[in-house]
Length: 438
Image 1: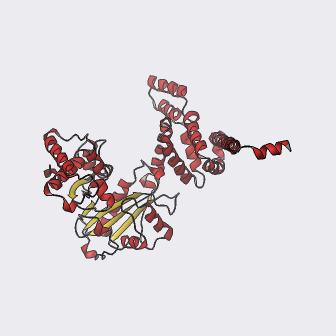
Image 2 (image 1 turned 90 degrees about the horizontal axis):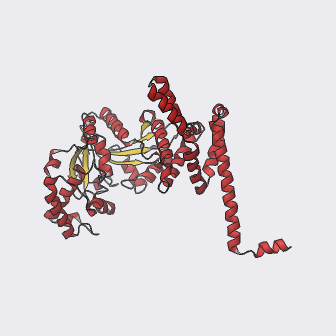
Image 3 (image 1 turned 30 degrees about the vertical axis):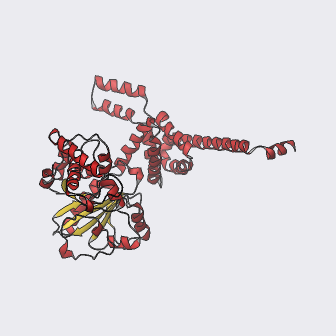
């Protein structure tokens, strides 16, 4: 009776403390079972029964709470890394005699055991999806745990191999696709939000195309998709392209294929190159289907432009520095970065200043760490900076991020490799009209 009375009358804080202690104990036990399972999976016996052990291990991994999952990543970093002494000895032997066998031995001992652990986990049904989920959690943990960078490098290395575009299936998506797949498009559209089913239906009519990459281990789950508009000329504004009420064009008008949105659907694949391969493959597909297409371009946002304008670390070529400084003064005097900026009301001098600064931002900052992410993607993919478009995106997001500007990047399939190489070496390929602006 005494014990019962004490339990009932214990203060709430004591009960919470006891419950927290019990939860931590259960969490630690669950993690210990997972670590033991990982060691069994990596053992010689585990190699023979890897699929069964992995199948048992995956739900245990998924059930770990956030704290236990973080401790699991620390275990991967500390207990499943390469043996430093073994690596040193193998490196010394290779340095003494750099033959094939010693290189193979060095490579083998340098590979962290956690890579083989992930390979064996991947053999179980649902293993690929589980590893992607783990990487999503790992990327979040990295913000406060920089010591996990080596673990992240192993995840990225393996996923880059497993999701090599040679293994992926490109599929067109139209209105006849499953409702689940169409819902994925609405959910993951990251550039120009899809406003319901009528909007999506318009984006999938014959003068609009959508293509996605799929992986055999993730059926029905698009990894990345691109939306394309088939038009008579290069577009200068986004609103007509995404207007659900716009009339569909006849095939005889298809002269230009415009990539106007590309969206990643799987955060666990961050850093794995997919978009560049998808664009090129779609362009080749459309060229075969519609030989009259002569121009492949984008209508792209400039999401980092306004943020760059608000900073004061631009480094334009010295001969343009006075003009850039004057343009910034014009911008500041007009209060263009304040809320309520309307491109239609901008004086000619202000428009000229903004276009000059945008040109500098795209043509000269793109190869640097200050460059725009979208510009880096397309220019690094071998596109050419073709044209700036004033008042091209009057949405709240477009005005906030880029003062309403958008840009066309041109994909000339004959020159993408050459232009890619130029960008790698710090040079932006640009049209004459862009080069004339400054």
